Length: 324
Image (cartoon, rainbow, N blue to C red; front, top):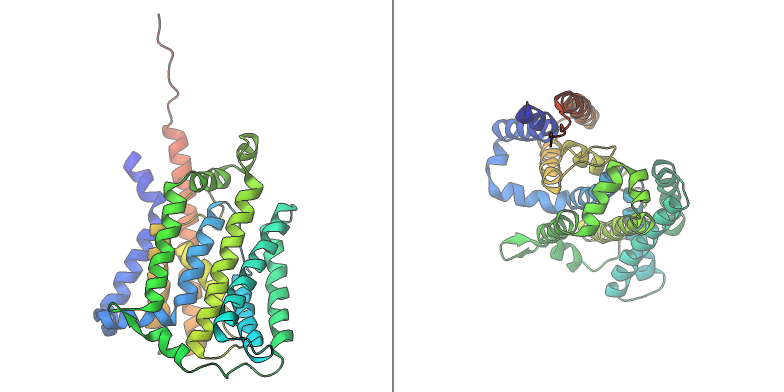
């Protein structure tokens, strides 16, 4: 019974692994290591935001504004570079700091008692609107051409963007699974009221994870500038939804309290492989198939988690008092 419960709790990411194997077996390009390396610059923003969202989802929260934050950060880079005439290095730093400020703003709203879903849904539209207002009708395109070359340039045999993802994942893994703030995140997601009664620094934890999410979104904004060589306010319309899909596909419970960064990694590989494998299909059917797969995994995963909880409760045997 114990092993069956563990299997049920692991079902979402096991389904993700199975789907990934099916894709690899049916798409010939996935058999080449060079093709996998080429996906890193293409899907950097999705993967990075999925890693940043994992600690938030572990607490039972959500951040629907990360895509808009990334776009706003890219536009800030363009505005500082084009309109203020600042050096490109200063403009890139301004974009990252802009993302950090957006994350802090989200954290403050959550600390004030606004539901994360409501707060970040509102700021999603706010940040996207600010990006449109700042950029105007025309995107910024006059960036130095060497920026795009830097984005795809290999470093020790791997693209720079892939090294960034590796470092980001290792930092997130170390913080979430090997530090006391990480254990507090899991406790907060498992039972927020108990976490408050246990005197955990809930407000500081929430502010920290949303600030970190904004910081990563700012880095993704810089990545968008390097990838496209332009800053466009209407870019990456479904970025946050794909990042959340990676988290869900990796077995992170959307209600919080359970999950692992290893599962997020599996989810990232699966979603990116799914998007790449369906790239030849018409865009409408690609989105339809991707959404159908994610719904199936989410529903099966939640059903398996509830079934596992029921079986665990039934198999529980309270300790009996030993006679003196």
